[in-house]
Image (cartoon, rainbow, N blue to C red; front, side, top):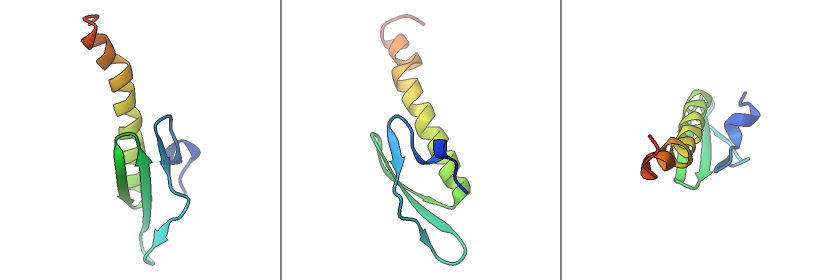
Length: 70
């Protein structure tokens, strides 16, 4: 079962509708980086973490590097 931090973050949200083929859940993730499909709850967790990390890198460390503050 997905936890709340897997289904929504600062820059992404998972659609409430989940498809199931009798074996796997299919989730749709809407984000500032584009829309993604996650085939399985395990994949949803990984993609959620990557989106969260991508946002942090983009606004945190990435912004510092652009400003010359390594």
